[in-house]
Length: 533
Image (tube, rainbow, N blue to C red; front, side, top):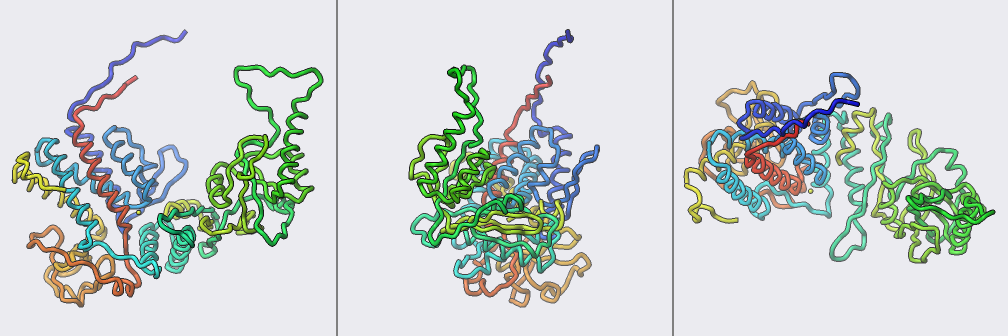
């Protein structure tokens, strides 16, 4: 008998942010994510000391999932960022950097957490109110009659991920495909509230990127032998579809704790097979053309359906069930009993397809709101990087804080935001802001301190404005007079710009909110209790 040890008491640590270990680890995490940020962000290679898979990336989702984080405070931060990225697929690094900056800046002030949190919330509401207003200088209108701005947004995301290893031609090709896949999910005859369809990513590794394509409908991967066994269907009308979410293998269901009483001479296997064949007869009498099953179909049922020129495809998996339901209009059938006519759906046509070494059974929809995006890349690392891309009131009047406290917190908040902007420069250069639009301009490291800026600058960071306009500049974080940035150019002028670097405003707003709320949560922690057993 093994020796029993008494339980160890839980370890309670007060004021966790005062720990030098926590501060150092937070600083290291900040340096890691900061070095990856922006269009010229640097790559990171992550692997454990015992060997195994090596991850090369600069994006937050892969970075944070491969980092081993043990301290509860850092777990809160990384989990918040990962939850944001799982919803918006963008702005994860921005969220992490801003959260770290806010925590570091506020710690130097020595104010009570209650005051800091309340003022942070107020400043956040002011930022969100401005960013959502029509006077915001950061917003660019999107004209859905032209794809130019949307294409710039997709291109910006791809070019910020160097581990994708895409050439300029490949970037343009994949950007156009991703945009087309998105447009295919928009219903053609939608009225009122629009419900988007779904785009499925089909991996094709060890293939040329330029071979990537997008197809309406759903591709079901299967072997060449299986495809050869499927009978061609020639029909001028839509094909009737039945979709099963239960097994049609003939296995006897698990009886759990109970018992099954079987009469003498009765074969359970034959009884179940008879039930399956009865089901097949109903499918044939209902003029079903295509039977899809999430799990396994019994060979005898397959043969029966094949004899009656009904295509049967099994083992499609749980991932495709929701898209198949949406595309075909079927109601998944979960029993072997009588089937309601309302359970059936339809597809426009079916065919076979081959891409690289893979073979597919292609379901062509009646309305193309479901599509399959076949993404090719040279190796596993480049493909893994590619697939993840593709949306208040004054406090001073309440006499709950002083003017000095508000000024200190506002300066810390603004400094945190400016530090995020400063993280875009990775080559030792300087960042300027113009005093008209408030846009970012980058200067090379070897530029003279006093210079004729129009001669050194070409375009702002997003590419919308050029230096030949009558502008004045100042260094980031330098002392300057407050000014209200002018709104962006009108829609017609924006549409003429061909190579803009853009972010999704919805994702940015969420990242800003998550960063501030997570920082407030961490700043409010007084104790960390750990179970050492």
